[in-house]
Image (cartoon, rainbow, N blue to C red; front, side, top):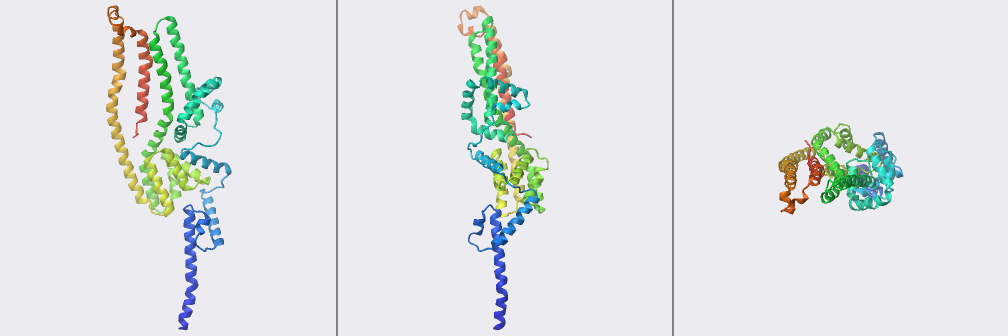
Length: 400
């Protein structure tokens, strides 16, 4: 009996020490999953000094590996602003205006900025109306497309391009009217069509570029996922794996991971940095990948097999998109034939018929098809339609 009591006394402290270590590991796991220190300590009596010491060693380790740096107030505010953009909100900082466009390298942008500043009072209302309509989506697309303009600056360029196009057209139309070489009706139609075309194309360029970036990411995603699967299966950590992808030349995907690692080094939580990037790109395949990475960071699950499965799904989806695009091109070729061949021929025939006095004398319908009508069709309507047609073909290209 005495020996049994001695044995129980010996085993008692060992069990208590093991329980304390388990509590400490559970607290560290909760901290790595994003919980606060208070939440990690909740419900457990753990050694606060040992926990603080362990956290200090973890911070020093991440600093040496480049994953953690001191976060300034400016960087913290930038992280909050990015989160607001992801949620569809409006950032509360002073945006750069048209004056800053004078310092860019592009001479065309400088001309647009000078034109806007010279007529800022009347043009500001038009630009503000565009910003109220397209501001939120435009801001997201400009960031996703890595176009270094604020929404206000970009709409300044679009406004100036639209008004300059209308003024140039107005000068030529006035010249035609004064010399009597053109009728008023076709010129008015062209005056409405040409600026509208410039405005629509200008508004659509950021979303088209953002979609192109997302398409390039999906193009390289299957290869990067297999790369990540091999490294994770070899025992490499998720942070080192992301760093390897960022340095491996996967185009837009590597640039995205570089941005994620940069945000993490500035103090942004890993989960937030990954989710902000995936939401900004708008790629469903990338969102699935990020969801599994975030889940693995929180639970410690194995990502290797999941990455291979997602890579196969993304490859299949890309093949389906390319097949759909090829079918759409077959239909678009008919519209291209109508715009580039049928429409010019019809305009020429109608103008030739209208030039015959014997016909226009009895059928007044042909009176409007004069040389000015032919000029507007050949030099404004057809080039504009072809420009929009080619723009939409290029925007819908899923890449190969």
